[in-house]
Image (cartoon, rainbow, N blue to C red; front, side):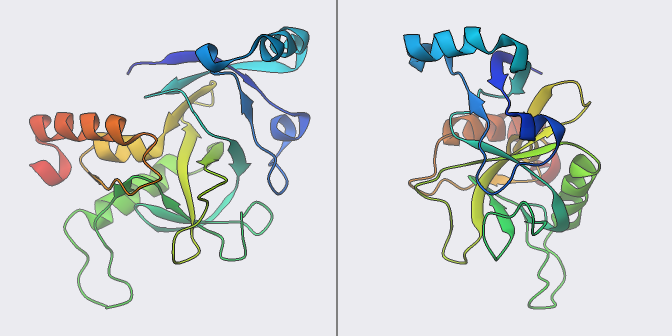
Length: 202
């Protein structure tokens, strides 16, 4: 697993508990960082935590959240206290997992149960963050669109669950403009999953 090291500035609220409303995690992104931002990082070393990320460094704001329900492999519902809106659901951006077909009462699509179980197991009792685009926050169903990051070992390594699902062959790439920030990453992971014949590609 490749890891990209990047300093992550956490507000006191994010360190001690879940963020309120839209309290984003501020992260320095190296090349795009201004001299002023660099000085701010240096001045706040005592309040900074060093995080590593897989498979890519975050490019958008992030918010710490709590999950109340796993809807399926690519959708979850947040607690009222940490939800982005009254709907509460977060739809994983850029990917698509097989449907559980709750509404139609038909049999779940192949690997739908496996994808849902995988998401539930990965999220259970772990620190969770949602990376979001403030300018394109919701889909037509009022679900928040987000990239879900988890601290798997609680060791400061944040892993994007969207990417993990594609890597495991439990999700396919679904690139819909303008939310295509990591489409190239997902496409590469899907090619690897196909080559490795895992999950949907067996």
